[in-house]
Image (cartoon, rainbow, N blue to C red):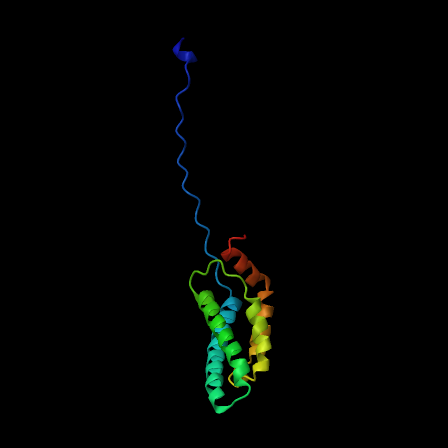
Amino acid sequence: MSAENSFPAPVEPAYSPPPPASQPIRKPGKVQAIAIMTLVSGVLNCLWGLSAGVSILAANFFGCYWAPYAITLGVLEIIYAAKLLGSNPTRLQPAKYLAIMQIINITTLNVYQLFVGDVVVGILALVFYSDPEVDAYFRHINGQM
């Protein structure tokens, strides 16, 4: 065989830099608002639940039924808000169940929520969750984009 019929020398692939990392999406203001409102509401619900639980000893009829609900809701709100306020939230879905629980919380006669208004916070959270920018943010952090 002649040298002309031999196989061509292998061609080195040209260096291609790795694709640039996708820029992190900026957290929308409405997501920040949801997190802050949920955090404040959670702290107030925990305070209400604890004070209602303590007042059971003073024969408060309502405290024995609603203290566990308020404490549970408050703890769930604080955990969710802390995750949402974090610098790099991942695998976090909109907590529409918390918004519904906040609206239902009006039945607990929560005196701390008279100033903040869990009903208002719950409704605002549901409205903010339906915003396209907020929806896009949650889809992005969950890798659905």
